[in-house]
Image 1 (cartoon, rainbow, N blue to C red):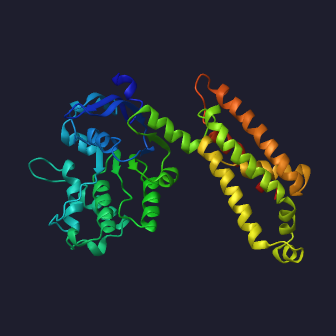
Image 2: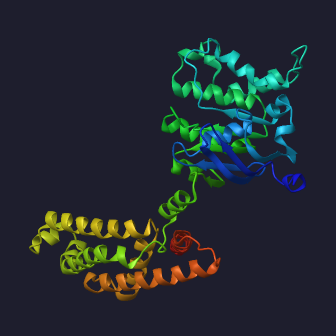
Image 3: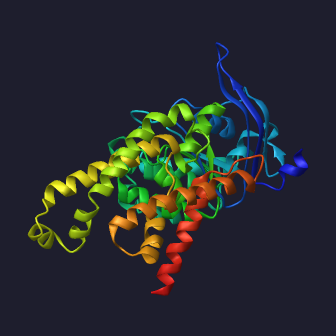
Length: 376
């Protein structure tokens, strides 16, 4: 297997980790990380994300399965050699390091120092470059225990980059960082040009930072549930579940049709609608509540399926016009037909696997809006 693992920076095969009491934190986990790839590790607390990272950087050795780093079995690498290639920022945060910022940063060169003399020819240039990268010049002589959580995180990130790893492991790197520092971290990760495995809770950060994602939840049903809520699908809808929501959805749609004339008046402006005898405030609240009710009931059954509510009404408006008495009906009809077609495609495209519908609607919707922008 080592021959195939060489194609990847890191490959994990069938990792299983069982702790005292017989609890399986990891079970048959397999994945690859390529050079310069940022992989997001997404999952709730207790799903085993930190345990997986500990297996990779050496904090946990009692696992079953194989891990390869550049084609070599990780368990056979000396600890110092492993530390030259893999660096980690953990969630461990001792109350008092009793070290200055500069001393903490310099510990990153430990794997590269000669075992007897402690010499390291590249140390000063690498340390200086990363201190400038994180703008830590004014912090060097301060005790790290005096820093805020965000400042301490920057120091620890600087320390691991001083280590010059090929693979960077980050366990919840956004903890204690404000939004500006989170964005700064995002940009720095993309500029590093090294492999990264980032454990996090924030799905938005995952979308912005990662080039790939590993949804890690501990059991298959949980993983399917997260994929469902992220991308949506019709596979979980049954006749038993449809009955009650369908009644409320139909009532909500009929109520929207009933207010179609008021919507037409509002399209001409609030002042005009008021002059036509429409209670503007009441109509706006009613329409908002009806739309929220219908949408929430549908999402509870299908998950979040993007772009349908934006693209279909826009297309139908170009065909049947903007009169809401007609537009609402044809938008609902066309939306249902569109979802039926997309569901058939999702089931057949990768059969017997089912592609999440949200991926298809997102691709079609995004392409359509790009087309509209190009026309303008």
